[in-house]
Image (cartoon, rainbow over all chains, first blue to last red):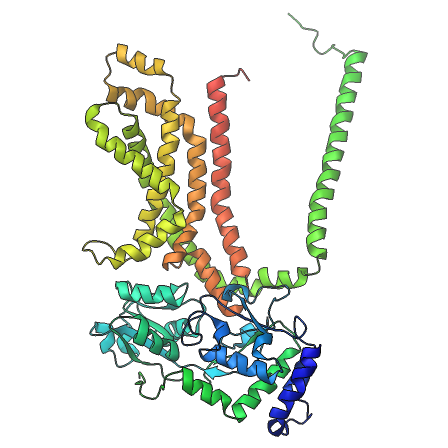
Length: 276
Length: 287
């Protein structure tokens, strides 16, 4: 309790100018007080391994990588010092299991969809990811300039992702999309020549091509279709903390923190050709 | 000769005995019914009254989600789980018999093959099937060897065949070793060679004897086809998990569980029946 009392005024003064836009005049820190799983501790979940560039060195608690940095920025707004944040491993498949959750929120590149929102609550979006095709340099798939060019190839993506939906709905390849358990498997299969191309969100694609895949290249990004899907933080249904986190997100969007984090951890995506 | 059958009247003692038997079977029926209602009803009530039941039911037993995912799940189940099992099974049997027979040979020239057979069973019985499948699905294609298929379905089946072949070889070896030496001695005196004795005398008896454990391994194989999902084969279970990841609903996993039961329960019943039949034949009414 003492810690929360000690933190809250400090943060509320730091964000005093931003909170003026809140009709209630209540800070995110005031809002979050007493609403966490464990008193005075913010428990954040993510999957293991935690992939680059969303996290760094598979350690979410180092504040490095986009999602780790966003999580700590939100935590600060909520009145939690870095030392008051603990991380817990939450396999994606168990994040939506019925029963009590052992995290306050889960941050794991989870796309907000209406089907999912029936089971869990999401924060507002904190990133909108375009999808990109990765192939091996010089391979036939790497020559594609349109989605139609990609139809004859064997293309894969991770299960449960927007990337996989993009293959199924937008490319509709002649052979079924290959489904991987995780991004590592997709990467290995591409290197082994077991698939011709893989799809991932653009920041992941940049990282894979730069660091993980020899001779990998980004063929292009998907054209946007209507409202792009956003990544949101996942909460237990009815968790009162959602509103506080949304308030914190609004603050770091307004004061430029979120843009700075994106600039620092995610590559510039303007130069990637859009596939017709 | 007219028999006084129609005139026969049960004695008072027989009537009493029948009455007692009827009474007892009525009582047994009543006790069994009450016990069943109490136990099964208790389980159902315990399940339904548990505090999380409504959420668990919505998450694991949702009819709209079952309908929406049925096509993908049944396709994966038939295309990979059932087909994979049917393809792998004959190869597993062949490898099992070959390895078991090789280990049973005595000739000096067969020594290297015997060693190979022993190493094979030791290695593949000692490794988790899951691990072997990952090695075959990811490491083998990584070698970029000519002739190694890139299709992980075949690679995964080879891994399953090798793992289960080792188990089945041991089952066959146990069966072969359980045949009494007098059988081989008798074959010798009839002028059969070692090979002929194995083929016509030992193996037929051994196979009958190991039928129940053999079928047991096949039931296990049917379930382990789900491990192919690890090497990106979109089998029934993986298709169910994929749907679950999008809809945040586990119903397709319950559904694929039911599909596996539809496949394994008949084989389990068949295994029981084969075991009982073997027992009947072997002991020929002495039990």
